[in-house]
Length: 151
Image (tube, rainbow, N blue to C red; front, side):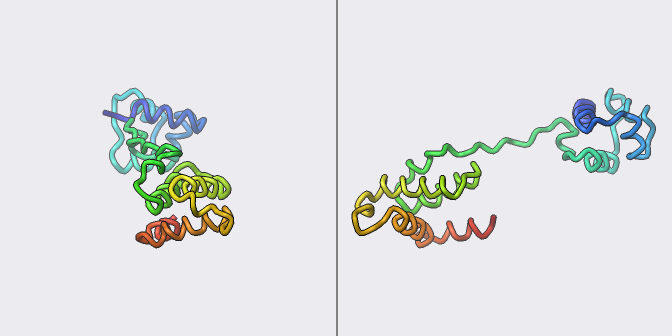
């Protein structure tokens, strides 16, 4: 598999002519044309330079698409066996989906209602129940705290 399709797509996305790209790569526009037609292939050094110039990966130039990471469903935490694992899963889902702090807190509160409704009696406000839920996630292996620090 060659660079013909990926190179042309990336070049056009940057709104560059073959001549402009050739000048930046220190080759002729005819060479760029040959790459795009599949007549010639750039050597590995030129391929890396092309990727840098066009702001794409070499995989993209070669027409390879990286495997797509499936986003977890927003309510996937409901399949967790306990509240601690649900806390960790909510943090993972929140990071993957880019949730706001408010959305994250609402999901933690829903998890408390789902697993431990007794925590939401008159003695505990919803916010302190969420804090307890998050602490439980930390206390059950520290994964939540480690994940937050690694981001």
